[in-house]
Image (cartoon, rainbow, N blue to C red; front, side):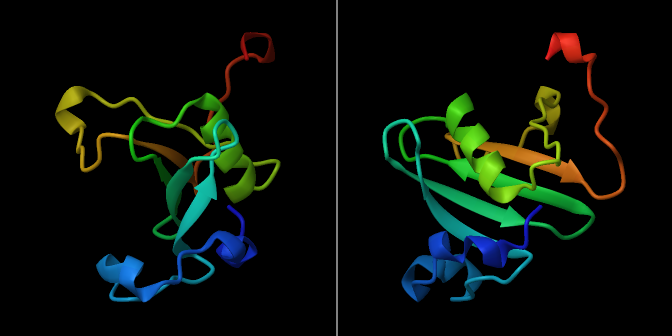
Length: 121
């Protein structure tokens, strides 16, 4: 994942909007950002961290789940060009839904994500 300071132009810095973080806007490893959708210009909230041996990016929209183009856009902004990130589809008993319109990208710091044969991608 990129140093999140590279994305400071989109970082949420208004203390009133950062109530859940006691007004802390983050650092090079954590933060919240407002990114415009490349599809319709609507605002997406992106929360990112690269600690605890995982890169994690959550992407949410107000009225619908982000689509493939939006998730790809966020991936290009937050991850380096050579980094693979994944979305996970877990068994239903492991779901924790705190927002109905959010998707996540993950990348392990210790494991390489296996890739299917190139012809399948």
